[in-house]
Structure formats: C-alpha cells, structure tokens
Length: 98
Image (cartoon, rainbow, N blue to C red; front, side, top):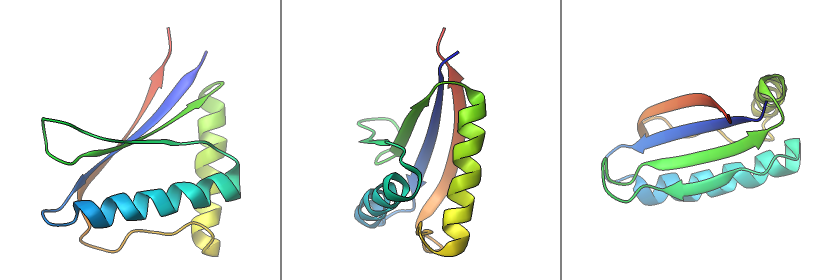
C-alpha cells in the first residue's frame, strides 16, 4: 500500500526565509544522498508560513529505510541539520493511500 511521509515545520517568528532556504538545501542533499524526491510547499492561511515536505513511497517499510539512511547522512554531515531556534515545532506523519 502506498505510503506518504510528511513533515510540517512551523518556523519561529522571523525565521520563515531562513527555513525555506534551509529546507531547499536539505532536500537537495536528501536527493543526492538517498535518491528520494521530496516536494516542498508553504502553507497559505492557517498558521502562517508553515513548511510542508512530502515524499511518496511504495510502502511503510520504504519510509523506515529512508529515515535510517537520512540519519546516517546527518551523522556523516552529508545532510544538513537546522540551527537551533529556527523552528517552533516539527511534526512528522505517515499517511496511507487508500
């Protein structure tokens, strides 16, 4: 069953541009290191400036493989980490396509 991974980042006040630039840089690194395409969106309305990252996978097992590979990439420095204070919150979710 197709699985979708989403991450919603709510930037701290005054950090929207910094978060967008960072997210773009991080997604390029994830594509290069893991071969995963991640879509980037910014919310219109609601909590202003929320950033959404979404990737689609064949199944939940593929998401777990992706997450482990990303963690290795972060440890090695191949995938950048955000600076402290950029985000007020980060929420991950896995959705199943039915």
